[in-house]
Length: 117
Image (cartoon, rainbow, N blue to C red; front, top):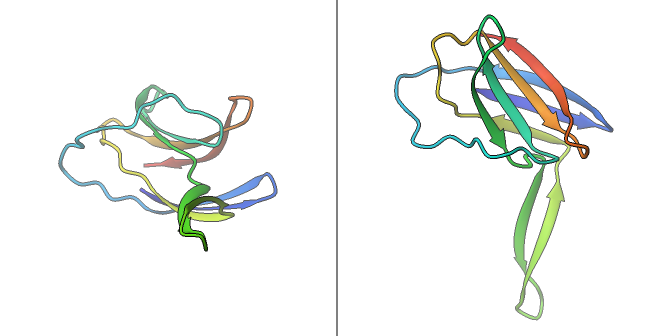
């Protein structure tokens, strides 16, 4: 699944670019505990049972290391307002919905988008 997400103030515009379903099995799924700033993706059945979920760690922030004038390494954190977000998950044949949630500073889930598969 590929999404485009744009952040303006505290509003998010989310567009599903495409969904590609292929045969195979993922080696590892990222099912760690979601923290503020993460995005949680859930695959749901018709009766809203969670079939699979994945956590994308801080997709709007990236840390870069740069070389300072004195030759030392410096770490710089950059916050993006717009991202393309690829998500790879193990497909379940009963999947009917894909939901993206943003995890807030108070560990609440804000629904960004729901797509029917």
